[in-house]
Image 1: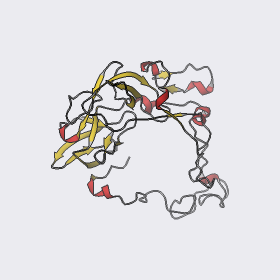
Image 2 (image 1 turned 135 degrees about the horizontal axis):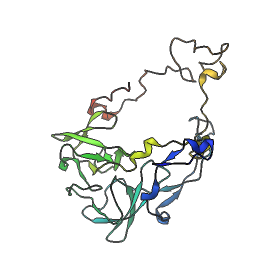
Image 3 (image 1 turned 135 degrees about the vertical axis):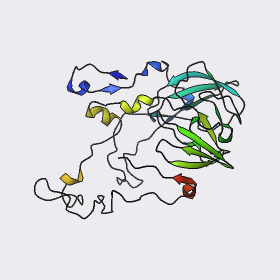
Image 4 (image 1 turned 90 degrees about the vertical axis):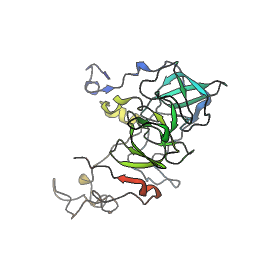
Amino acid sequence: MKKYKKTSPGRRHGQIVDYSVLTKKKPEKRLLLPLRKTGGRNFSGKITVRHKGGGAKRLYRIMEFGQKKLGEKAKVLALEYDPNRTAFIALIQYADGEKKYILAPQGLKTGDEILFDEKVPLKNGNRMRLKNIPVGMNVYNIELEPGKGGKLVRGAGTAAQIIAQEDKYTLLKFPSTELRKVPSECFASIGVVSNPEHRFMKLGKAGRSRLLGRRPAVRGLVMNPCDHPHGGGEGRTGIGLKHPKTPWGKPALGVKTRNKKKSNKLIVKRRSKRK
């Protein structure tokens, strides 16, 4: 981590990740796309997601979450920062010259070689089917359906642990403590996602939060009754309701919001609540 000098009130508590491990180069032009901002609005211009807007301009990095080239070694050309995600990304090049961006695992270095195949050596960044990975190993960028690309465990410093191999399924323990079965034919990458210090970042001032596209969040308690169910009253009064509600009057806190999904039946144990 890198701490700022106390040159101003904003810098006094600022703390960011040390990016000295990254390669000093510009992003690969062919793997960039323009990213249009929505400001939290839908097609008709109505705000559907609050507290979004503004922020610095970004370009999207086209990522390879799957494994299109099996059995071909790829060399790591650079480790780069990605403004669209918390983890670092790695620029790799195959033998035929094709370049791709992938999620970088912790410990990956420039010049390393990685391999995607049915069964590969147990090395950081290598990718293979879950059924071939031994119990106890950490994995990330996990597929939910074979061939659909990694969907799970992609945030900075996260990893899932393989608990058991059961017939056609692999039992995984996720960072949320949830236990879930995933088809053994699915691919996963070995290791832990890079940039584990991200959770210790302190922005230090409101301006840095605005650059990330986050607008101010106002508490419902300080609003008027017409703006929020918690609003109104004289002075610092309570919410005055039997139970908390959202700004649109729906029950909140302790109410299940997860929609029914086909994969629900594969969950062995729900995540434990934070104390």
